[in-house]
Image (cartoon, rainbow, N blue to C red; front, side, top):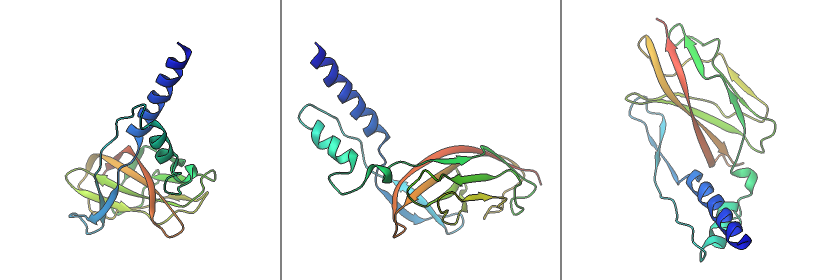
Length: 172
């Protein structure tokens, strides 16, 4: 009975991790401003008793030499940004790369129906990015945007990413 519970718990953990695993990322030119946006591909994997060790090795990075710290990272951001105009710096737009990370990050801001509206510079450990203007002219209004943070290696290759929603308000 205890063995079944342990096996079930291990499989449930593997499934949760697999569902959160990022598929391959291909960068393609974005139609809105000629910058880049992401196109995701790939599928998850069903974990069985026969492949659980293989999946564990794959998720830990052992199979391809990726360390666990290259698959997770921390950042801080303010979820509501206000711009007097989209080309004026926002006093409350703020993102930070944690000193707890092992690598640099950068981020893109994407709005459905428009595309990428901002591409950040690379952010070293412990750095903050604030008071920035958007790269795209937005009409006054309230927008729901997706901010995708990318963790990069020493060659600036993307290791993993995570996306969070923010609200952008353009006043004029």
